[in-house]
Length: 121
Image 1: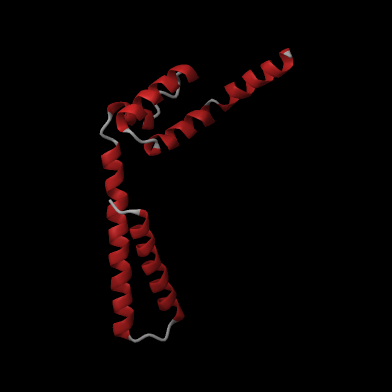
Image 2: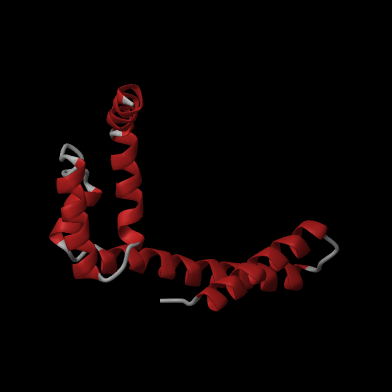
């Protein structure tokens, strides 16, 4: 797995290479060398991107969360399941997107609750 500095260095190689290719004025050997350098940098980034999801989805509950199987649960139950998953995997990154999807699916319920609270005051 690549660190942030390594990823940024690869991005700089890609950006710089593409800028040089777009600027023109290079010989065939120089163009091919830049293309190879860019291709290698993309390959290293792709490996880093491809391997992370496989490592994160070793947990059945996490996979069920990603698949949306808990989206019909009440917020209290959903939060309990979420807490268990985070405790098991020791990171929050894989659960961010499923939590946003859950919130989007239940935004109407949240608005109704807020409206009822505000009107009862």
